[in-house]
Image (cartoon, rainbow, N blue to C red; front, side):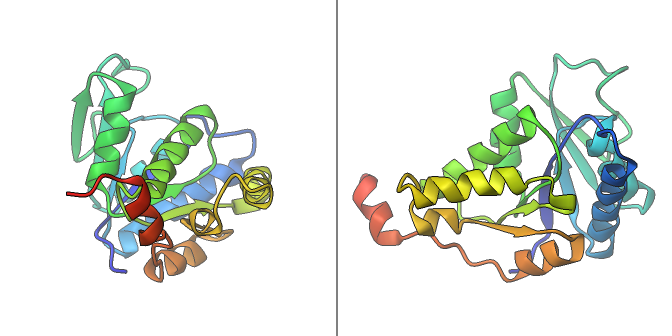
Length: 197
C-alpha cells in the first residue's frame, strides 16, 4: 500500500528515558525519507514534537490538529506547516482519522490510547479501512498487545478484528508492514451489522 501521509499518536511527554525521544526522531526522519505528510496533535512538547520537529528540520510537511483551548505558549507549536484548530478532542480525532492514510502509535498514555482505540474501533465497524500500526519499541506496548490478545483468546474480539493492526519493534519494520498492509475485516460480518442501501 502506497502512503502519502500518516497520523502520529504518541505522548505529549518524553518519558524518563532518552531512548523514547530518539525513536520519535527516528520516526520523523523516516517520514522525511519517504516524503510523507505527518498529521499530529499540534503539540510543541514531548514525543509529539520530537517527531514533528525532526520532520520539519528535514523540510517535510507537518499538519497540526489541536483543540483551541490549548495554550499556544506552553502546549502548541505554531511553527508547523499548518495548524488546524478545532473545538473539541473528539473533533481532533475525527479530522485526523479523515485526513491521514495510516495511523502510527508510538509510546504515550491516556490520550494515545484514546486515539488508538477510536481508530481501531472505527476500522472494526468498517468506517475506514486504513492501516494501523503500533511501534512496540523497547517492549513498551507488550502489556497492551497481551491485553488485546486476551480479548481475542477469551472470545470478545474476533480474530479478523485483532488482525486490523500490525506491530513492529523497529521504525523500518513498521513502515515495511504498513506497505504490505491488507485490511482483515470480514465483509460478510459487516453486511450483517450495517444497514443496506
